[in-house]
Image 1 (cartoon, rainbow, N blue to C red):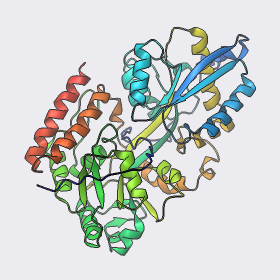
Image 2 (image 1 turned 90 degrees about the vertical axis):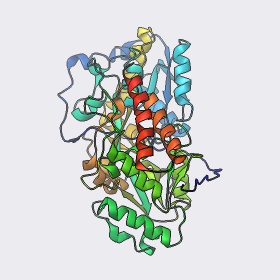
Image 3 (image 1 turned 180 degrees about the horizontal axis):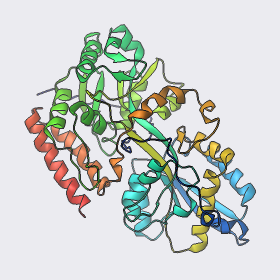
Image 4 (image 1 turned 30 degrees about the vertical axis):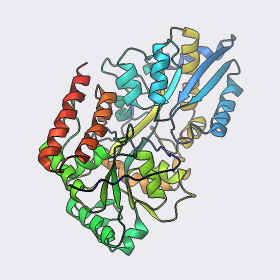
Length: 444
């Protein structure tokens, strides 16, 4: 049995994305735009003329600088200069206990008025439970149709007004790979591996050059699913969920064999003590030589700490890589107070309609806009480098029902695999157990 490696960490957590959460719309074509906004959409600005003061709450997950107090206060100052009668109280969430806080608030009848997060929570979870307001009347003109589709529930209601998007991939320490002679196994121009076999050759070369920990399969808790899903399904060539988003499909021979290869590879360790954020920090500080959960936000947030050249990469695949697209935006809880609902809609319209203000909103996320935004490419030069991954965006399977349970089942499965003999047969059995539980949750 492969030796289990547990890394003791005392590091500040940095949450990307996503997590690096994995997400996408198959064959995303961001050039396609939605129909023009209707007059009804413009008419929802009734709160603009309301004289009565109203206070609303905004709870935001760590999306770029949307949990940075100075950044948020600057955006609120812009808003209150136009709408002084609406007070916005902000609470900052994280991915460790943010879901518990929101769910506890919901159960207590104290749900926030606005939450900023992704469709997997706003659409497939709270929206599917009938807790959110339909925002289809205020979707900005020109929003990419593929993005709107990921923010729309099975009932046709838009439960998330999308703000930004990004492609999640992986990253390597280019300096270390160059010194180990491992750059021959990848294409720096396209940010892809020559093949799955060459990915493993590169890992072996870096390991042989004296780097014991090249990368880690992390599975210490919630956040232990981000990145590893796309890594395993790309290497194996299997899928994670069906195209209809009604069932999970990852328990396949292909995926089991892909994970078995990772289990057996020198330099790839299973670590049941850490999650994605910890693995990111170990990459940043040089302990790991690759990260399986990475996007532009991670490089920006760690710019001062990085002592090497980061090369963003697609996951290894013998076909076209299928990467996860992250989408983030605003959802409005239906708390039964029409004045607060209108104020909440006014706030998110203000942050997303006007090009100048929308540029500030997106810039604060460190991600990219969900509609054409002239001049935005000059905001951050790294956008050009990372945008090479955008054509490889795959299916946004996070909107499959039962997503919260499915996430838990995935990292628990990885923990059990870590304690197995590492054979494809043993791994497939553990995958099947996790998939059955995930599909039971999807079926309600």
